[in-house]
Image (cartoon, rainbow over all chains, first blue to last red; front, side, top):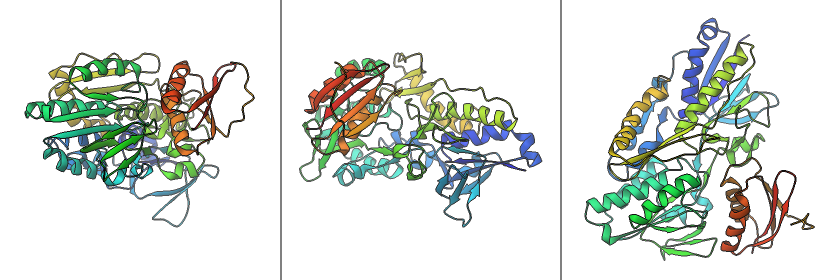
Length: 381
Length: 80
């Protein structure tokens, strides 16, 4: 009998896992003892970090797209479809393009984040973002012609993808306007929901002096609750109101509805054991990347490392051995601090980050990795 | 503070969440509820002892009580 492993989501986590399993379970796949299905609702795999560079005219959204099938081992069945229903008791799921429920032996949810700007009145109409292809292109149109006024970067939704990206955006914007001789005519304000500029206190402690040195205004304890597109104001739950000429936001994020409907967790995030990545609400279900509610950053590196852990655990299960691999919280991020400098952090559950001094070498390392990423997706790096 | 007699309308269980998870979970719940609602936040993160009172004051919500339980804290916050 063939064991069915279904991976839902062809982003970083799902794609790396599919290739990892194709390698670990090659004999079983060849013998027909195991089938791996990778389900994605888009024929393309999308590498989202490219979007940070689009508003500054440095990259195109297409630079972050490749055909999913071209990245995944031929031994994996790639299905372009949507999962509409998950029944973890029966171990079945339904596809949009299919009448009958499909049985699974192991299910991995790697469905990632979606944006929910509609949760903040006025935000969808007047806010810009670089957390989507369309958003980054629309922001590019605004930013390239923006020569004076108030630019407000507001972190509204947490958790959100790439926790460093809001800091990166204001550092890059500061440098970009400086290089073009416009910085004195552009005010940059950064808002954050808690009392510091980043969720991680060590990164916040490092970033705040850099922001002060560079004249980036900061509003902490700012939880935006409404945007007035006519008056061009952004107001917070705490009673603060900010004027803006260009509003760039990190909108609220949500996972997919099917996760809450299946009773696996709230708002589309799966409750998991943060070491084994097994869902706490069902048997034989794993989650990874943004989808797994582990408390670590929603970052590609996290999804990558977690995919290795889930791959090892699933291979152990298939081989009838105890699964011993665990995730230790490992996270790795480059943080752009300008248009040609970057820092770097590495941390885990036990060891906090210590940001490296910004340098041009780290900036080029980040850009180099963005190209090498396609090897990561293929499971080669 | 000692065991509270306050009745919570909503409970947010953020035990196990790393900082700033508990405070963000509380803020998320406060966003969703009506004025006058009492939210109980359960957190085992020490940072919550300063984060939650600071935010409640900043946002004008009332921190009614903080309970020290066996292995976590309970914060009762009323939305203003």
